[in-house]
Length: 98
Image 1 (cartoon, rainbow, N blue to C red):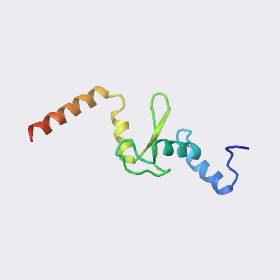
Image 2 (image 1 turned 120 degrees about the vertical axis):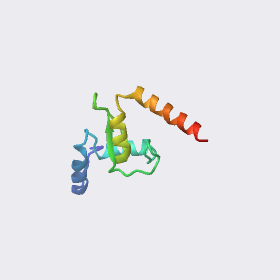
Image 3 (image 1 turned 45 degrees about the horizontal axis):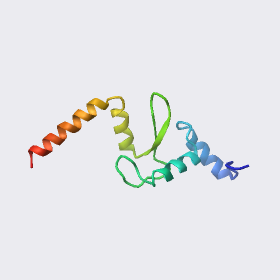
């Protein structure tokens, strides 16, 4: 049967990761490949075991992130206007110190 995990090791591995937001091992592999093996927040290399980022409203999986990026996205989600103002603030500060 295509896509079925046959080996006991892989069945256990799949069970260990599939509880997180319904993203099983194959789903993690697909995200990893689609992201080029890098975190979209910091651009550093990922592993298959990094955090599964998801929309807290819909539950939809968005990608794999490092812990720091996952926490950052969690804290910023729903506060897009604040993020824009914060970036403007930082940009203005950086301009003033040059």
